[in-house]
Length: 373
Image 1 (cartoon, rainbow, N blue to C red):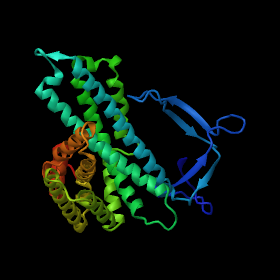
Image 2 (image 1 turned 30 degrees about the vertical axis):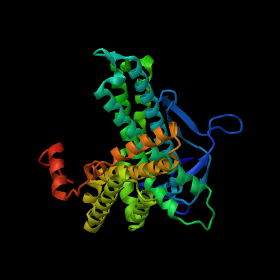
Image 3 (image 1 turned 60 degrees about the vertical axis):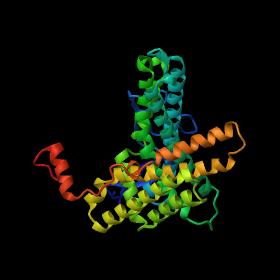
Image 4 (image 1 turned 90 degrees about the horizontal axis):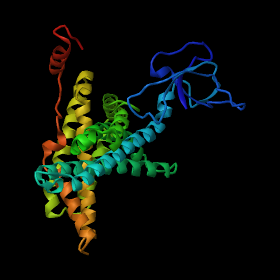
């Protein structure tokens, strides 16, 4: 599958930008095994993912078949982007888990100040924060997987709510999890001290291979702008679906006392997010919408992850009471949910309306007094 600029079959003209791109299906090799109009210029020397070669190609005389309508390549390929972006997030979470497992295993062997790292308060706290972050990322990942599964098994008469939800959640998931995973894996490397920096341990490769997910299938900023696009195109519909998902997750059953405060923080964060979206949309100012897009994306991701952690913790509480591992797991899930949602500020992060004046100040700070937007 490839996007290529098309010529109007009647006039021979092409359109600039994404509106001039169409989607094609083409074979790499023909029936005789020869390359189908593909010339390989070079293999690229990448920072990571060296096990997956990336080539610079020239396509000349390639035979392909149009998929969809001419000039509608980007909308047509959007369903594929949902899948590849979810896969990118999955690779990030897998890398986090592997690096974190190495950090925990090392803590059981390494001694410092006369005690193993498993008994050092600061090291324990550091690993606990990583555990909670990993759980939050995993909850959001599998929520997106659930949405994708429901859509793929839906019939023609099914409600389109899941499609809109996935359209919003996928860029949110990929942007936040990819960005979070890089710092997380770096922290795992640091937890091993000098050994973590050694190639034979493997965390270096995990870090390099994970870094690409902040770039492939859309950088953090591109994905954040996609969130704004979805909110505008659906005229508030996507925000309404987001609100419904969050509220259902924290209200499906009556919260236990330990989760009540966490659930209330999620609701308050949701209200703040809704007010923020309403304000920037009402402004009609493109610069204001775009400047705060990353902070909005991250706030929505953290808030939805918190709601899902609460939902999972409530479910685990219903399974508890039988003793043994079930009770320990329920307690751990409770702790993770409560600590992730311990304040509205931690869920919202740097969410604020950025007006034109503040954006101009940013531009001047970076590019000098003659900067413009």
